[in-house]
Amino acid sequence: MNPNMPYLRDSYKQEHPLEQTITRLGRAVENEIVIVSQRASREHAHIRREGRRVFLDDMGSTNGTFLNGERVLESIQLRDGDQISIGDVSFTFHDPDTTTRETPFPELEINLEAGIVRLNRRVIQLSPKEFLLLAHLQKNRGKVCSKDEIGRTVWPEYQAGIYDYQIENLIRRLRTKIEEDANTPILLVTVRGLGYKLLGKSDME
Image (cartoon, rainbow, N blue to C red; front, top):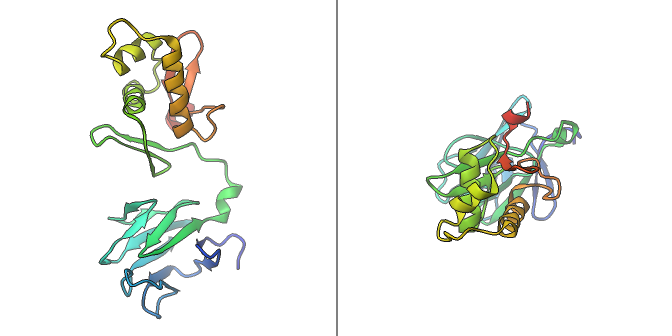
């Protein structure tokens, strides 16, 4: 196999190189990758290559194709480490070329209305206070939020005020969920003496 060829690795550690422009996945033996599962459709999904980019498409399957635990509703570009589930079978997408590139800036998506947070397209679970803190930082993205401001927003039920250690503990817990290394934060940073701010990729350019 070409060492730079993207591939899928199944739960048995077997590698399936994505050599074709379109790799078909499904229950039928004609597919390039045969899915042995009654919950898989005959031609369940396609993985499509366009140059260096690789896309996943569900082909109108009965039980759906899932990427990182969420149903695929439209064509979506795959990234190294993505988890694909079809029926009872799971694959991990690997793109060897990714390791030769600069480490990408973490992609944090915050849907305030739906209460959903994704890190690199994977849903992460936050406590109500963690979500309130992140929502406040998101609304003020790139701006410094003081501890007093955070305390009033996250703990409105406590009119007497919040101790610094409570805010610091909440910041620490949130960092463990949204940072690759909570000890070296690049998304949720401390501005010494002033407070905290949430950064995005555009803030670093």
